[in-house]
Length: 193
Image 1 (tube, rainbow, N blue to C red):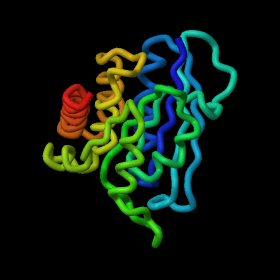
Image 2 (image 1 turned 120 degrees about the vertical axis):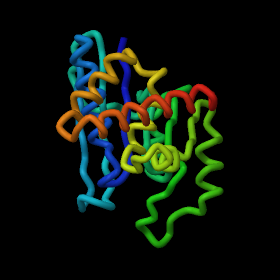
Image 3 (image 1 turned 180 degrees about the vertical axis):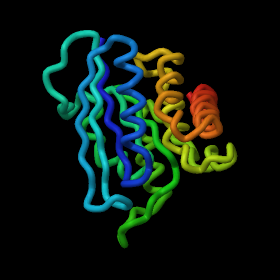
Image 4 (image 1 turned 60 degrees about the horizontal axis):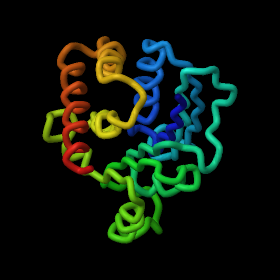
């Protein structure tokens, strides 16, 4: 078993938090993991991407070759498109519908959505709205993680335990809000697919 995941977005959207949850869950499940990340020019607004590789055998490189990603999870729809060359045929795309418009020539939203939906395995959801309705607008990333959970080689329990472990220092309320976001993402994805 080997799963290659590209995480994409802009600074401040929680890309590295998704990576930390995946890493923690994979290690707790006795899988091998490699991760690399690239940060944009600023903490908020610059491009951020991470390659996460999970396997039951040793992994030698932390970078995913073009055409080999099983899934791309993006917290920003245009950033998803940047990494399409990495997606393997039949791979899964999971993205929030909300743009982070930080450039003057940001693509027209309908064209952007049309391009994303032209791929067969796509989950395009309003994760930001879902998170906000749950009372934690910062949990957009965890909603998207939940939406992709059924395609991950990690158990539900390992992912939920990783969320609990990583958010426990922020208190029980934040842990519960993130678990709720994860569960809602999972529920929405099942209805979407």
